Image 1 (cartoon, rainbow, N blue to C red):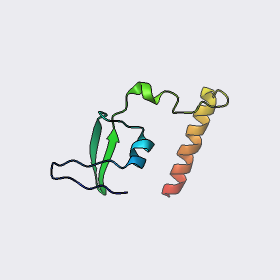
Image 2: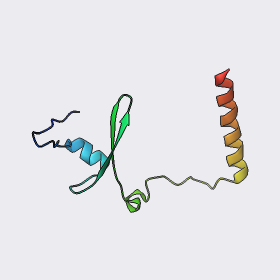
Image 3: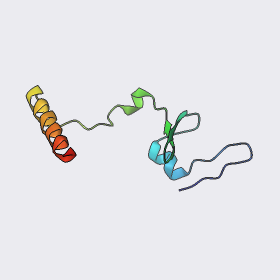
Image 4: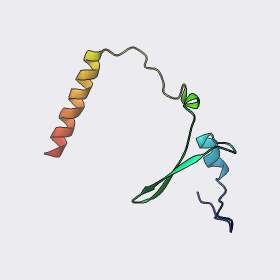
Length: 81
C-alpha cells in the first residue's frame, strides 16, 4: 500500500491501514527510524489494549514457566554452535 505526500507535508493513511490499526482522526503517532525505513506506530491508550491478549485456557505455574524458559535457552544455545 502507498500514499502520496501533499505540498503541505501531509499524507492520507489508506482506509485499510486505518481500519487495521483501529485509528481515528486526532490519534497521535510515533516515528522510529529503522535501517530498512521508518516504522510508524499509533500511540494507543492503554485502555484500548484491554482484551487484545487472549487468556490461556489454563493457568500456568511458575514451575512450568521456568521449564519453558530453560527449554528456550537450551534451544538458542544449540543454534549458536
